[in-house]
Amino acid sequence: MNVHQYVKERWVTFTYLLLAFLFAFTIYKLDKSLHLSDSNATYILTGWGLLTFFYIIIDYFVIKSRFEKINRFAQLKGSTEELEEFPFPLDRNFAEHLQQIVFDFEKYKGEIRTKASAEIDFITKWLHDVKVPISAAKLTLETEEDQLPPKVYKRLYTELFSIEESAQRVFYELKTNRFSDDYKISYISSKKLISTALKSYSSFFSYKKINISITGEECLVLTDEKWSSYILSQIISNAVKYTPKNGYIEITTKTDETKTIVSIKNSGVGISDKDIGQVFKKGYTSSQNRTGLKATGYGLYIAKKLSDQLGHELTVQSTLHEYVQFSLIFQENETIYNVTKM
Amino acid sequence: MYKILIIEDDNTISSIIEDRLIKWGYLPKKITEFHNVLSDYSNFQPQLILLDINLPFYDGFYWCAKIRELSNVPIIFISSRDGDGDKIRAISQGGDDYIEKPFSMDLLIAKIQAILRRTYAYTDKDLHILQYKDLLLHMDRQLVIYREKEMELTRNEFRILSVLIQNQGNVVSRTRLIKALWDDESFVDDNTLTVNVNRLRKKLVALGLEDYIKTIKGEGYRLL
Image 1 (cartoon, rainbow over the protein chains, first blue to last red):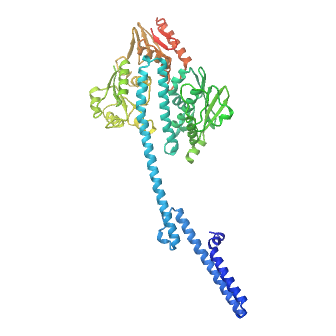
Image 2 (image 1 turned 90 degrees about the vertical axis):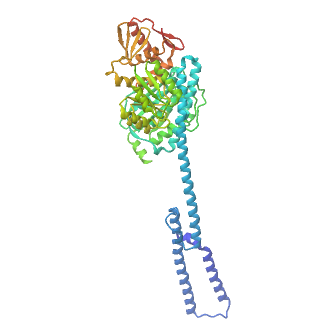
Image 3 (image 1 turned 60 degrees about the vertical axis):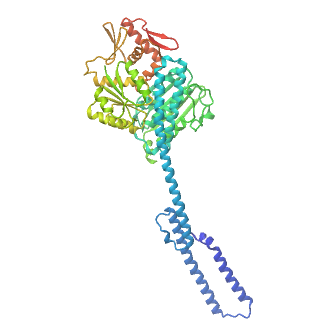
């Protein structure tokens, strides 16, 4: 508490003192019959002045200490200082209310936390549960493939795949919000990341007769295996959606001393300059016509969020009517720094 | 014939696995009573076990540990749980492999073949062979045999031929063949599949089998 704040706090008192003094002084000056010797007047004025001065000093320090006490109490969320230690009724009242608010707040926070973790448990369980009928449906479809018209098979397969992808996405979106709970950084082969990410998309490469090429050396990157393959799979999912029939997807790995870049390039209409800033935004989908897998506008958003959290870089380049290229950049040194910082 | 025990409580999944394993020439048995898996194990004495994690009464980890007290039989976990923790736990409790649901049968079969080959090929005298008419396919050594002549196949050629034989002359779609060829090592696109099938055809011609793999336009391939 500084002097300025103190004056603001006490201006009523000071105004009263000043008015009382002025009143006494005016009466004294107007009434000729009142007589005071000069020395007495000096005594009274000095005495009055000293008393006021001491009053202000003491009052200032008392107010200051009350102010600090309340502040400390609030900062410690009302936990250590006992309510009995507030001798002034006003402070005490204030402290009591504060304590009640803090108590309610903590209780509320605890409830939310319990609820959220119960929800996560429920959704995780649900995800495992829903995967069982999905697997059963996929296996049934696979076994009956030769009994079904190819068109029907392909449609059902694509729809089932979309269900599976969406279910998976729920899980990853939840996980990104509690990232620090669940990651394991180690050296992972870039080739392994790519193959894990590619695996489930074989049918779509076949349906659209997409040519695939995987080039570049295999190298070790410092990352979390599961999260990184998910990032790559979302990029591949996107590439498969937008590559036209007989188009190509090229996956290239490049490395130098400081970083490793995995690029996924696909032929197609590309993204215009005005839209390219939007691709990582939640809910953004291109208006271009699509076949097969549906765009949800969530895949790339989650991919970007995850790559930020891992301390990697995810970039996009495109030339309209030619290609789109996404690059996931693993920085050798920064990765560890960014992750431990969180 | 290799005996395979299926411990999976979803009946659709376990039935499909059972059917397919029979077609591939294995002897599968699915468990219907999950109270006492161990006695089924002891009675059946399988060479390989497929084990789900989420089971009634006790989970797959429990049964894995129990079975490991008795034997070193290979165990493949099949589960919808995809956390690293579960995978690590499955392997550290003695599992040999881990397949996540949803999975494709061709992938499961490939894993089963690989594990059986690793575990038994050099000790077991029984030959594991697929047959289509006079054509024999030696599963453990990746050989194709026709009238006393034999020919080694590459991994891709072997997989293509085994899927075709397993379908016994029915049409197999290109997509399905591509799916069967995709694994950790190789990613085959449409053109590469054509190349591989043509190479396989040449090898079959060298054995005296002209025109053995028919192209069905717009659909896929089938054996003559």
